[in-house]
Length: 66
Image (cartoon, rainbow, N blue to C red; front, side):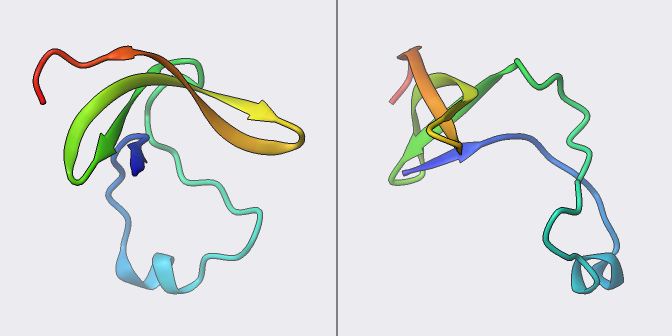
């Protein structure tokens, strides 16, 4: 299972220099919908959030195509 948060184009040298706490701009609002994939197929729609201090995805619905 994986959640698709967005896309970003960054240079490979920038990837190598990433450190904990760095932020990558995905050009998407923080409360926007994310797609949750199961075995590389979109199954659910969700929203980013937090649960007990960890980043979480709340399932908000199912996708039309599986």
